[in-house]
Structures are given as C-alpha cells and as structure tokens.
Length: 57
Image (cartoon, rainbow, N blue to C red):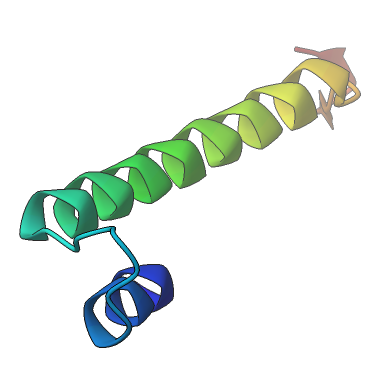
C-alpha cells in the first residue's frame, strides 16, 4: 500500500490503480496462508508419535 500511495503522491510516469492495491493485498494474503500451511504441514510431518496408555499412535 505504501508504494501505491507514493505512486499517487509523486507522479513519475507511473499510475496507482485500485486493482494494484487489491491484487497486491490478495497476493500477500495468499502467500501468508500458503506459508502457514507449509509450516503447519512441516511441523506435523516432523513430530514424534504420541503415547497414550502405552500405545503408540
């Protein structure tokens, strides 16, 4: 969003558009979700089995 505000405030041959802001926000959200899923799946794959009542699951 900072870059979009700079582009709007200081016209240097580039234009700021609401589509840029929406798509950048969507991309950041998608990247965050993907990263969290990657971290979660990596933790579950590397976790040790738990013991309950002397039975390993």
